[in-house]
Amino acid sequence: MDTPEGSQRQSAGGAGPLHGIWHFSFTVADIERSIRFYRDLLGFELVHEQEQQNAYTSQLVGYANAHLKVAQFAVPGQPRGLSSHDLELVEYVNPRGTRGDTNICNPGAAHLAICVDDIQDRYEMLHSAGVQFNSPPTAITAGVNVGGFTCYFRDPDQIVLEMVQPPARRLANGQTAASNKSSSNAEGVVKESL
Image (tube, rainbow, N blue to C red):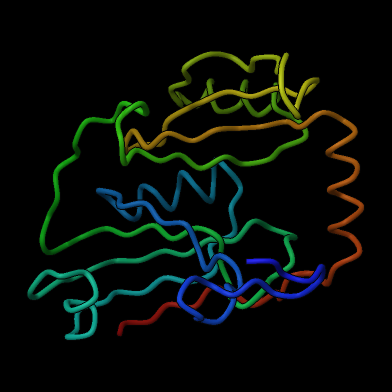
């Protein structure tokens, strides 16, 4: 389907346009341990915590009597769109899950890449805190990010994360674009039970 430049693309079947990404989510074994990792070690801002144990949650996730603990995080300083957060972590209190194969090559496996401007310093800090890395920061020698650095590492649940330090030209362009947008809403952490 041809769309005039600057117009919003319609979804298949005539549905309205997408409005953005609401969040990315991982299931974790211990929400408190994960909050300490993502907030205290990685630097995400914890913006909301809640427990969900109700009919709507059970219907949503497809488990009778579901009980979830949820923590939502934002990247500090990022402009906010419709959603107040970028990352959601969920602990299933009921039913309890088990960790499957953690290899990133498996279909269905996922990872989250975070953008930094000090990858070597962050690597040293995280490595000294006992975080498991696949390798130290590696120079990107091919593709659109030539001149940058990247490395994979794992959170306490063996979830694969990636740190990317884009090449200086891309990082400078991104910082300029971000400074031209509105700053994030500085609300405190909200805790509630639904």
